[in-house]
Image (cartoon, rainbow, N blue to C red):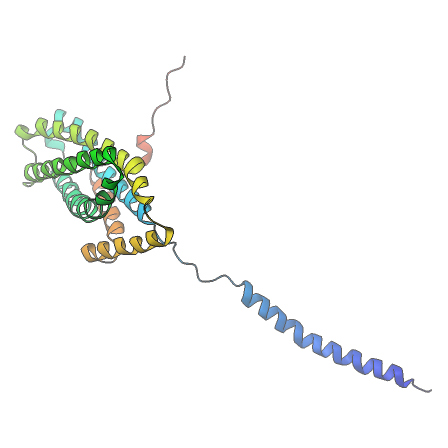
Length: 243
């Protein structure tokens, strides 16, 4: 039987192509896998305005602690956990006033917003006045809770102070979130805002270590637990009356 040399060449080439394919396919597969392999997950950076507003979240939770103890102070002051209130006031002083207000808002936000015209100048003046009033109130709270209990002499005045302070600061923070911070942000490019975010993070690290926000959130969570305020579902509003 004779064998066609052309067929022999075709067979030889087919074997060579098959061998090359067997080598190439895994290599292509590996290359494709390397290209499509997801990069190591990184936590997205917090923007400057997001940072300011989440700090407001910690401050608001401290205010809710104050709000929730108002009825207790008026009805049964001896049942109020004065140590937890002392912790809340200390957190408000260190994180809210000395860091968030002094180091960020008053040093970086307000001076820029003042340049937007008379209306914004008025806002900044009022907000600064409210910061100062808040510091007076924090001094008072720290003073009346320092002995581990709240005397009947201070219970009703403290309840009144908390009531007016919570109302002031809720309006204060709402105006900052919706008017002041957006006006401030308009002054900068995305690149500049990234640089400011890094600057704010550096300030936070210098004051509190690695992550002041996380520590503040842990602190307010422990205060809420000490006062029985850590179950979010208990604050779900009841259904409205039927019409």
